Length: 331
Image (cartoon, rainbow, N blue to C red; front, side):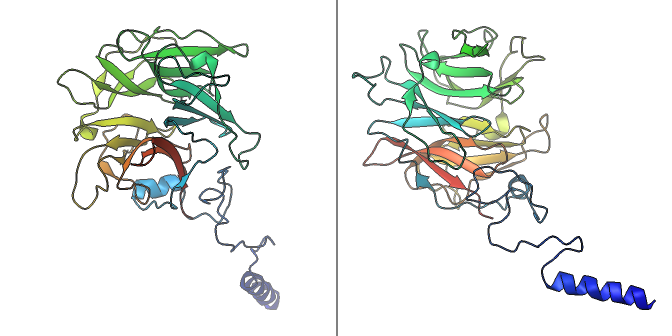
């Protein structure tokens, strides 16, 4: 019994000094949570002291963000919109109307540009035109799936905005095509393509004559099947315009822009909202405004990191064109 009392005393002393009983130093440094640290671009989520992940806070509707900051190394004097971040968070793609290297402007008004960094903690270098996704028409939002080996891009190659796709094969991108998308490209305007991480669900924001822009989804059984007929996500479509869907890999969290006006929530004419559901095949049961990031200007074009801890988005201020901003979840 005396030996047990000595062991118990030793455990208490170690705990009081900030050690676990295994001898590891307890980390009480503010912001040390790797899964939720607003300044940690890696988001490895490995800290055993984590009490709640960003996703858990989204689902509990307690998520908060740092004040958004402009992405000054990305933004140009022209418009910069529709950010997409690759899985490793080392490449950023965007739609931009900036002047081309060597002179001139994008033929259709906007091309796809890319910025690539060596490490997630490095600043983003100035973007360069990305030829495989850029065409002679207006090139809008693009998104990738299957470990960034397939892309879906909205552009105006046809007589109206449609969605195109391409694959990465042996290190090179195939030509953009409407293969698999016959049932999808049926509206007058098919905007804001976002492909799920497994490439089995396509979310986008079509608009048609007399039909407000709204969020829809189309499904397929495998990544080599054609998509089925689109279905509007009725519980999300409540405003005069809803679009720019972006989701986490489990598809339980969806961010979007909306021009809905709800007293006590709306901030500007266009804000970034979010919706949550329990599972990918469930109905979204909660819709609310994303806290801390919206302004009295137009905010839209959101992209959410895989862990839900980082947001990139577009803002249109009166004295500038569209610029890109980012914000991180608070610890």
